[in-house]
Image (cartoon, rainbow, N blue to C red):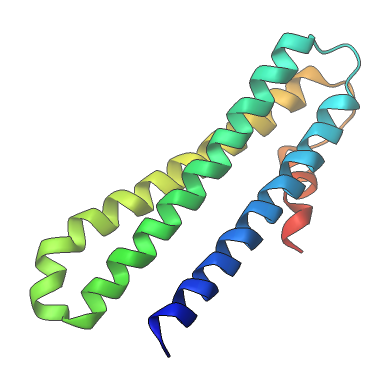
Length: 129
């Protein structure tokens, strides 16, 4: 495959990620909009936290994939050099997931609707299905 073809594939993947993020953010905004008693400033802050967590998770995933490809191209030499970076990216993805779960817990505390954190998280993630 030519380098130009690879770049087009990467651009398509990036476009898909942007579209997926937009859908997830819109779904999250629907959840916030369904909470009329929630302060508008808090809604804006929580939306920004959610968007940042998604962006962090996506960026870390892309960097992890890049490092993994380098490691796999020459395992013995590259693993020792790049293994620590791979771990850092995995940890960053995990922290982004934790932020999303904490946000879901805060939403649960703000609502009078008997939802679990899993219910809220599944609503947020319905774009993935």
